[in-house]
Structure formats: structure tokens, C-alpha cells
Image (cartoon, rainbow, N blue to C red; front, side):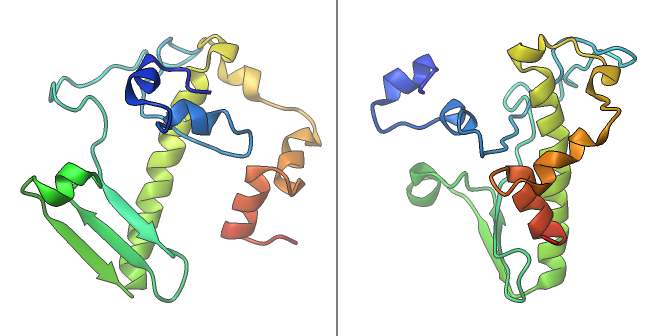
Length: 164
């Protein structure tokens, strides 16, 4: 799909956010503010705290978060070649601590849902100006994706709850 000019500059093997987002079974959140104020909501803006990173700059990896032996990798490194071979970075590996894994996983889900909502609001097919009333479904059809095995929402329901 490579819909970005950056993709062309980086070569044929480059995969970016838009490539993954174009796969219907993926649910991806891109860090953003809501570009157009929605009905009943204030316009969002950045704080201006820094010019270097306009959005969240948290870096961690969670492996097997919901098992008895989770691994959390966190620190200043960007998981890039430069961060592991040239830069002065730190990395902490925490293994087997389910409490720490629960905390990191909860934070991940909080951030994901926060930015997923904003990403959806900025999607051109919604024109960025939907009201919250537009999303309200007044019948049972809203639940169908959660019971469709081909849908990511079904897989998330199984992960967090039950497939029954």
C-alpha cells in the first residue's frame, strides 16, 4: 500500500503504519489529536512542552503479558540499530513479574484506546467531524463484530474475557 512519500524514499522493503492499517484484521492506533472538534467536545491541542516529540514517547515491549512468565523490556532505546550499537541508551528487562506486566499492559491498553479513538476521528471517511451521537447504535448490531471470528474485536474479547 505504501501510501507515504517516505516509503518510496526508504525502498521496497519499507513497511509503514499505513501498510499495516490497510489490513482489515488489524486495529492500529496512531498518536494524534482530534483535528476537528466534535459535537460537544473542545478542540484538542498539544501542550507545547517540547518541540522534539509532539506525542507520547514511551518505549516498552511486552512479551507474553498475560502468562505466568511475562517479559517487559523498557528504557530509553528506540529498538533501532542506532540505539543498540551507537547511542548511549539504557534498557531494563523484567521477567516473571506478573504485577509489573499487568501494570505495563494496563497502561498500553489505556494509551491504545485513547489514540485509537482519535485516529478513528481523523479518518477521512468520517470527515473528522462526527458527533458522538453518530456512533450510537440503537439496536443489537453493535455486538456482531465481537462474535465474528474473522474480526479483531472477537480476538480481543477472547484474549481479555471468554470466547463463549
